[in-house]
Image (cartoon, rainbow, N blue to C red):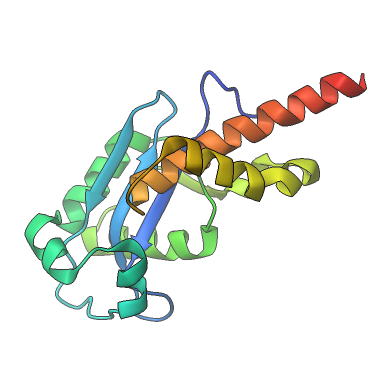
Length: 175
């Protein structure tokens, strides 16, 4: 699949309480194909207890913030289905994001109406080779102050657009 810079694929990012067994989603952000973004904190379910202070130090989201500003799992799941229904959504952390989204939709007792795929499926080897440097440049140019799910999704989407454009330029120069 190739991405069109006028309609880039939707990218999703999930922040979590930590890694491993028992971790759960605390924030979901998506950069949509039409340029809009979706982001929401998630109020943990009563049985979601796992918490890693190291994860909190990365995303900067506290349990108190989630309790005060987070939405219930069923509201976030319904919002995601409304925004993403029938689309393929890409992530750079498929294994983790798949598990956390499954946990969210399981708690919400509703099916996930979009497909989650690994972002690497859109990249060739030469594109992967320039990914990290390009992502660093995009992050610097966007000057985002916070490490948050929607910001991360926007960075990934803009990096994808730039990498594919650079790859196209390189291919054009060879021919």
